[in-house]
Image (cartoon, rainbow, N blue to C red; front, side, top):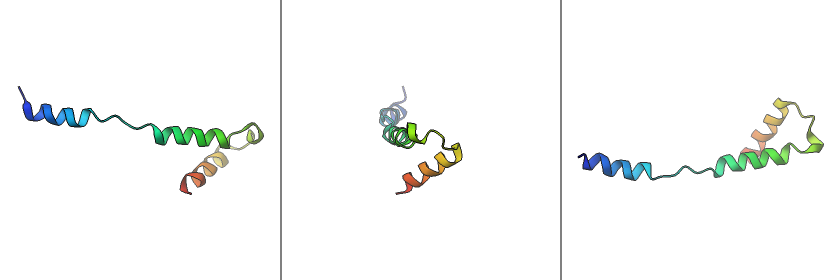
Length: 55
């Protein structure tokens, strides 16, 4: 019934979101938040994660 909208929807709705960025962030957080660093304050943990993501 709407061929143009149908083609546009197929082009854009077929794109799957990538989870690589979020998986990388959780992996990095797991490395930072080890049992030896379990006393880090949340603000310190966040600062470390921000520094790691910038480099």
